[in-house]
Length: 215
Image (cartoon, rainbow, N blue to C red):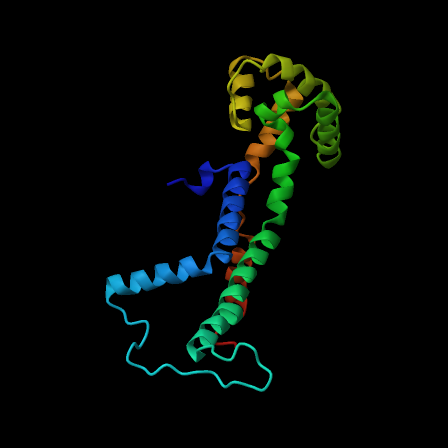
């Protein structure tokens, strides 16, 4: 099992998107989830339905076409509409909203991935480098663009996949001075934490000031 310290921002963003897609697929497969839950109840000997109970019919109103629906079916439909869908939609919204910044940072450093350096054309690299320089203008200079374009031909026969591998490759082959801006950009990426504990620390300090006795 991967630890948080071993996961990069790009990997965390990919795992997050896999989780979001999994929840979206689950949202459209409610019947399969119900059957899976019933099978689990049967396996563990949990009673999920009273089979001896008399079937109840819903009241048929004047002009109603579907007047032969069981009351049990209406209850299951209400559970689907009132419980399942709001729960899943809330989880999707929270995941997409809370990790919006993670996706922005991941997209900012996408051009530094070795496969993207090889695949992107010159105009796309120039635009990505320009946006990156504007965001980190106190750390990198405009030489980053020319260095990335030069690096494109240098690594096209390698099988590197991550920014960490690129950074180690440049350092181990004594190319850090030649591609200093690229190494600086890689170090910025590698030093960014995937998660932060700022809210937890805030609540921890708040408890020292406003404890239960003061309340």
